[in-house]
Length: 260
Image: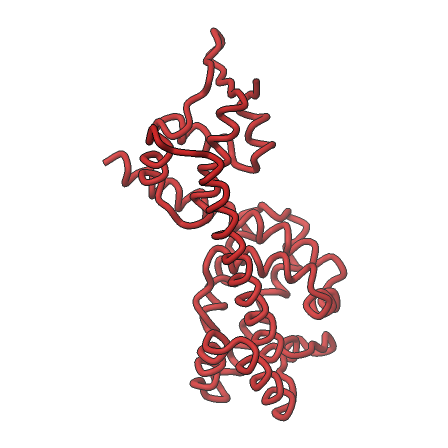
């Protein structure tokens, strides 16, 4: 049997989410002890796995409950379908992240900490055109739309946008000592999130992917390490916390709709 805390750690979901699932009848505990503690068995574990798979492919909680409560529901068939769907999603997200990677790297360029105003100075025009051609050739319309948006700005506006982006990262460095989950860092990540909209509309999935990429991708890691040696690791942690909060708020809104 698993406690709520143990199940939360095992499945990578919050205790609050599990409580929500219990409240709406999506995932009831196998046993509630005399101490009011919830306990879950292996069957509950498999049901939670199905819930997370269906959430991953975008189904609403109400629809997931209807599927799992169907007497004809077959776990093996469902898992086979999940595998095919997730494989397709992996390929799509890899393409999307590569598109974001290539496009942003060509936009933000190299940094020079000797002058804060040049932290996100662009590449040369020749190098920018090279990146644009590669992005469009390899990843098509997503990259094309991002590049088109960028080129719709005047040179003065581009400079302002780059300055704004540089300022955000410098302020994050100045506040790293307060912790990745501090109100100050969260406020800066809200600004970072909004700043990305100068280039494209970032989904929660893309935000999470960027957090990982800032640390894992050698070009981004080198860029942020020049600002501060600890910045890549800090951004990965802070963005993960921020994305988790966004997902939690989304879940609360969805549950609010379900309870109406």
